[in-house]
Length: 170
Image (cartoon, rainbow, N blue to C red; front, top):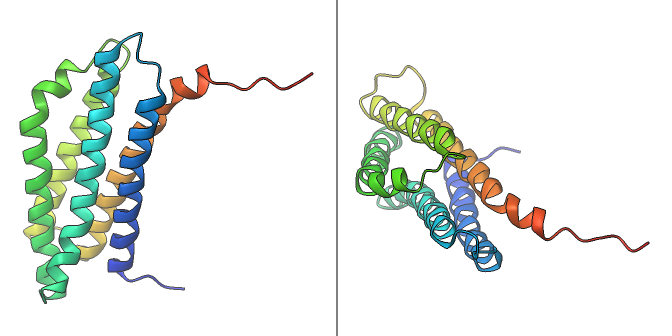
């Protein structure tokens, strides 16, 4: 069983929509009495990251549907993805820093640093500085984004699971 890169992009787009939806549902059920601003900020970041992941999956599909060639299409996609991601971080940097607290400061800093490294790798892929296939590099970086969305979602959901444990009947 083999997958085409566009099949993987479609799957990632579907999963990104699911992340955004589940984050919204989780936010509705999460206890916000303790720190409503922190919960809203985390939820906003989750949804924004899911939308960024969705855009990074749909842009290549759009370009290939327009007839852009394989090699040049992946390189253009890398540039556009780097542009989308860096624009997001430039526009949201202040609110990302403000949403940090003592518990998540180290995690946020690592996430932001790794995302900037991903942006640099996308630029290197766009300029053909990397010796690997451009679609393999792009999909690997998209997989990293998916992993980041998954871990952020699980971190966001952990308090909800802890407070709503179901007791077994005795």
